[in-house]
Image (cartoon, rainbow, N blue to C red; front, top):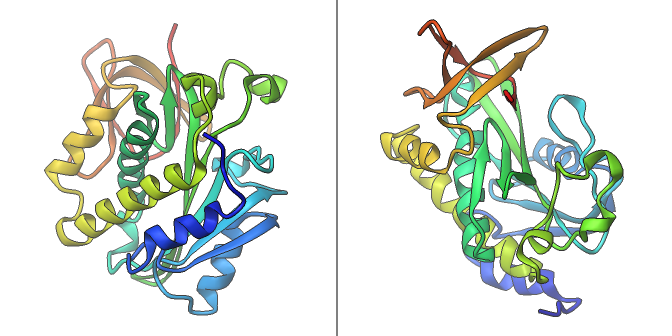
Length: 266
């Protein structure tokens, strides 16, 4: 499918009147859509504003990592959210975004997308998308959450940097064809909007937990989870009722983890 230069306008028309994406600001190049989203949020931008960029000079991943952001092929966007929830449960937004992203990419591409806890989307065992949520709070009140999503859409396999070869991929590399970024972004924002509105009504519901577990790439696998300077090894049992990851070690002991980096144990 050949994209036209007005794919952003196509996306704007599709999102007209919707909570997520009712306003979309598009930039040719930014340092980071999350940083720019925070700037707009501090200026009291409305909830649902989407910052979309053709490329990023300093794309942000988790724990200070860089998100590779070449121009003209992928999606880099951030959404301003203003949920009336306690700051302690804000990490659950990353979980709902994982469910939304996996379902959206599956529908847009026909490929089986899965979630690697806590914030990556995998296809065929390779990372094609990542999620980064950043919160600003005052006391017990959230001012806003910036939800960033990067999706590798039409990145050619041979253009993936050497240090990411075999680890990162794209919809095109895995699906063998080019995809419309307007279509992928539209499905992503639609699913994000649906899951977010359900979350505001239901919280981290049994339905959301079950959907996350259905889509998980790590459930039942033996993994190592690195948390700061500690490592925990065990079999992934899925999510607890509050969204924590449950591990069971070989002695049968359980661990609850709310953050960390997962790697498979070979």
